[in-house]
Picture 1: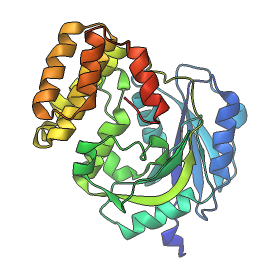
Picture 2: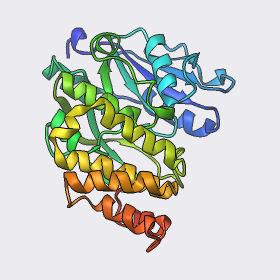
Picture 3: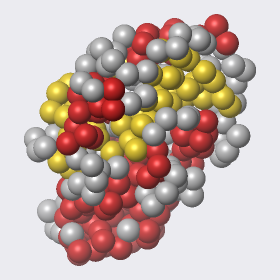
Length: 303
């Protein structure tokens, strides 16, 4: 590769300080990239004291730090890292995730082949492997599905587009939930997202999401997406998917009226949407929400 083909990359690593060993493992995987260009990890300490022992002045694999001075959630943390970065390419690696050695090399090559793209993604593995079956993710693909095979730790982006026409992570979404999905929508609206069809990100299984149980807030976030992306209305299945999620999440929050309202909207858009029936079953007290979630998790999918 020519020098111009291996530009420096900044990697934003957000942490709240409660997973110090995992943070070190994430940084070790960034340091171990077989990419020949310089890589700088920007650790963003959010509402915690900085752990300066992780810093490094290695000119080819530096580790620097900053604090989150924006909204106190993951969107604010990632944006703080974007603004503190100095390179035109910026990637993201959550503090509890790790990268396989060829991630940056393969993704930089994919960006070179797609000069209009704002973002490139890749496969990941947690309890199961997730790979997108196409060379690109389109805006219409994202209307139909959240696409779990494109997680934030798989993102490599062009920073000038983040600071320009595409924009940084939204800090308006309630509590920052689904901020990664919303940014994917914006990037795909700008240009199709190239996808490297290899497992390059490892996400350890968790006992539960940080957002688990905050059902009203999650429903607010999905309703926000429907309000801000009118394009969902042109894809009946996509609209029904999100409306069904609002219905189910509202049923979990025991907001029966809201659940029924969104269940009706989901059914009108597509009678095939299963979340509608799950919401109605919970609202009618035929089954518990925990039972529904257990069945979904047993199949290896999300609600």
